[in-house]
Length: 295
Image (cartoon, rainbow, N blue to C red; front, top):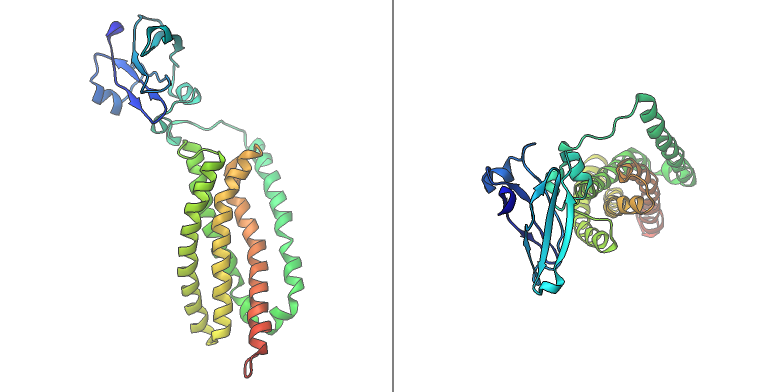
């Protein structure tokens, strides 16, 4: 191999990637223990079925010339690619290998305390204003809350469960977007939503069963326990779906998807209160109140 380099190919269904390392290091050790002395070069060279990869010219300084040789010599393409000087530059150049650009290896940009406080404060102030709208929902169901104090007692449990479940889903998507394991395309979003909907169904069922037992053990009323557990199921399902979709939505609008974690907490505070009040109104007032001997 010219230039004293060893190569190996990594091919996906659509592209081949070829990293290059000095011959003095074994392929195995170079893969597992890259250092500042190793040459790290990746490139996408098209369809693996119709092309083979080879280094055909020598290496000069920080430049290395690569040729992607097609099945037909007339289709051969010549390209020059600079080797970035640092791992940060490698990651910024769009490496296909996610593990080489793990979050721990790339330092975040540095900001002063004032700059960070302003950037975060604007977002938190907006969320604070939005979150205050839950007071209007509570005011609309004042009679329900007065007649059925159990709803008020377990309201924080319900909205807390929704925020926690949604935050878990949001963090999973945010990490996937950050590492490249998940992209922001619609097919990827649809696949994530389908997977998390199944998870939400299981979580909602198990948590609502636990919520029913908790309320019944304290209150001793099947109607109250049923209303709370139904609310809990709907809240968890809603929060998981919203927590999964929100990072994709923020990304589409050019907003840092990391804000989805705090946003889902606020959204579920509002939606959790609304879902709880509506469900308890239907179960405890409309349904149970219309049955003989109940209400």
